[in-house]
Length: 117
Length: 107
Image 1 (spheres, rainbow over the protein chains, first blue to last red):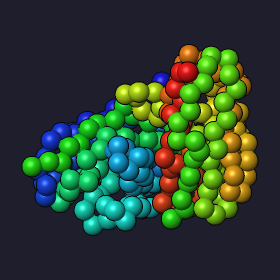
Image 2 (spheres, rainbow over the protein chains, first blue to last red):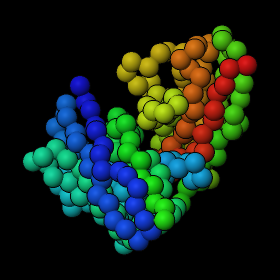
Image 3 (tube, rainbow over the protein chains, first blue to last red):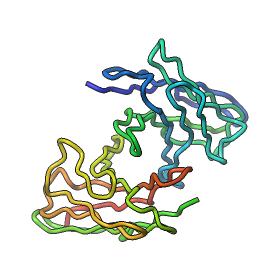
C-alpha cells in the first residue's frame, strides 16, 4: 500500500541545521508532486514546500524561503527537506505528503523537530 | 494568502448526534476545498476532496458541501471513531492554507 515514512527530526540549537527524509513506497514516486507540511501548537498546520516529479517546479513558503530547501531523489523514492539557520519558531512536527491532484493523500506519520538552546 | 476560518473551534457532542463544521475562505476558492481528520498523536487523513467528493474508504456519514467562500462538513450520526480534530484546506492557490481546526469532543 502507499506509505510515507519520515526520519531525521531531533533537537537542534538555534542557527543549526537538519535534513529530513521521507521514504516513499507503494506508488510511482516520480509521477507525483510531494509536499512538506508542519504542525505546531501555536501556528496549526502550515504548508512548507512542494516539488514536482521532475524537480523543475519548486515552491517554498515565505516563512522558510532562503533557509529551507526541498529536494527529491526519484531513484531512491525519497523526498528531503534541508533546513538551515533554524529558529525557535520552526519547532514543529514535520509531515511529508503526496499531492494527489489538489489534495494531500496520504501523509507520513511525522517527525518532530525541536529548536531550542 | 487566502485565510481559512473554521467554526466552531471546538464542540461537544454525543454519539448519534448530527455535527456540522463550517469553513470560510477569505476569497472565492470555487470548489478547491478539502477536509481532513486528525486523531490525537496521528497524522491528518483526507476525508473529503473538491468540497464534496468522499475519499474512498471514508464512511458515508461524512458529507461535504459548499462552493465559493462557504463550506460545510457534516457528520450525520457521530460514532466513537469520529472524536477527533477536523481541518479544512484550500488548494485554489499557493501557498496552500489550512483552517485552525475544530475539535470534536465527547459530551
